[in-house]
Amino acid sequence: MLAVALAAGADWEAALRMATAAAAVAVSKKGTATVTPAELRRKILPHAYLAAEEKIIATSGDLDAHLSNWRKQGLRIGFTNGCFDILHPVTSRC
Image (cartoon, rainbow, N blue to C red):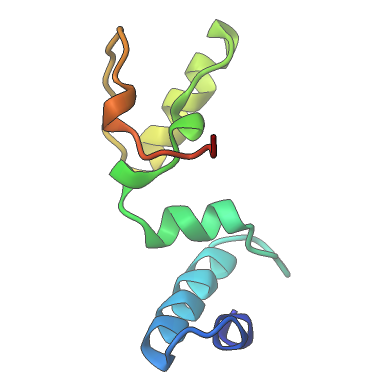
């Protein structure tokens, strides 16, 4: 991660933070492990800034698994309905 961040133009401080976050994710797994971009993003970014699509439950059968996973991550769980697109970062290009 350190080499990738530096090659992408990050300064040393940012590159070291990203490498440390990636290492924290990797050592939490058993054996030799890789770190996905989504795992790194979740480790680095505050939970409030996760992409909206990661918060959507596709089917009611997935609800228990999602709730369990989110609780393990220490996330707060809430419910709302309606259209709140203005609250989410723009993730698509027009």
